[in-house]
Length: 579
Image (cartoon, rainbow, N blue to C red; front, side, top):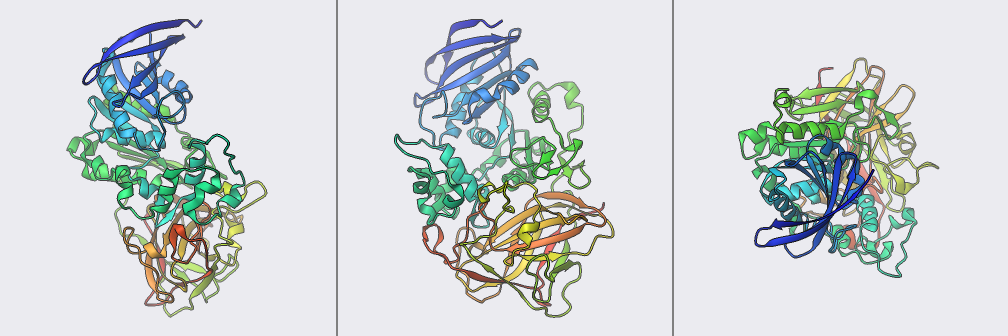
């Protein structure tokens, strides 16, 4: 039976007393109170507080979300049932909270003000943690670097410390991600009509006017799309150096197929190696699974089922982390804390390591070969461990911005705009003439690797700019070619993110393409395959090949090359492990 309770709390803030009205609903043994917490500028943020009736004082766990605090109800109740006081707050300008929403703009100070308020409540034990993923994970980092009182630990899942390096990879922007998110998280003016043909919208040029194509002004989207370098525009969203000053135990969680994978893994590595204290360095944990952004803890990801071992209780793991560092439960603290738990795809099993990558041995080189006809999977592209013994003919492909290579094969069930980050059969894409394909012989023994594969390519183009996309795939005996990892490098950004330079048409240059964190075991009889092309659209924006950047309205077809000679041995560097 539910009963309403109305009460008034008088709470001390930094400089004055706050009068905060609350409404409470009792469900089972969990009391839910909705209050409005004032921020330093007077804006009121709607906040739900969950606790069991019998709990008078306890550690507090906080989530701050732009996605409706009511969606966290089940997890908050679970935490409350475990003896915590769970707090969930709508971010500024979202749902029941006042103010205007500008992504990430106020999360640091609003997070500080909220945590400080919680710390001063009589029912708070003085120990506070935070949980949540994606944007919600970023609110944890942003609050933590402000140094609020009482914050003991955070558990950022699938998120960033540098938003530039999450949104931009190798100079290319994650176009579909940010534009579709912007269309759903910006204020629609009265009378505006949202466009809905995303296949056509994502082809729009120039990028600087993309908000007009959506249907209304979105100034922050325009800023993100036009600041293609990590210049001062991004300073407030770059906490890379600040996070290592945190003396906090932190649990980092992400999947290989998640667009946040590089940043999440990088945050763990930074904290484990460079955090301010020995204790902080020793109490970092990384959980790396086979998931994409929407499937953390699940077994079915894209077109693959990774089996029962891939099923992981995210909330349960967070709760155990809180028991260790908020409750300081002796039984939990007595259990070993592996710094890294990573899922080995293919073997579909969890492994443990003291750090990431698991092995610091020199990577193994797999060299590209062909007789100059590596186009399509029916071509003569090969990959093996032997460097070119003679100068082989170069491979050439045409990158046409009006017909970009899709990030995922387009099917009747999956239009261009529905491209996925997760695993999908790439055979349709590998039949395009603008894709170079290099395939190994069937493996005679398992091939196991864990770390960040890197492509080292000797390339050229006949245009001022061009992209090289490298995709690592596993070819099954039945012919399926499943993507394992992918990276992109914009030619003009080959040497510097901050000071890009145009390509010199026809001049050969060496580029390195990071394929991101991955751990996999290819079984005997399977093949290793590498695809190289000029686009991964619309997960990344098209390079117009003109060098005009986000303000360019025109495009050019680029003739791009990959060399594999004695002096220029293009290769893939795999961080291999013993099986």
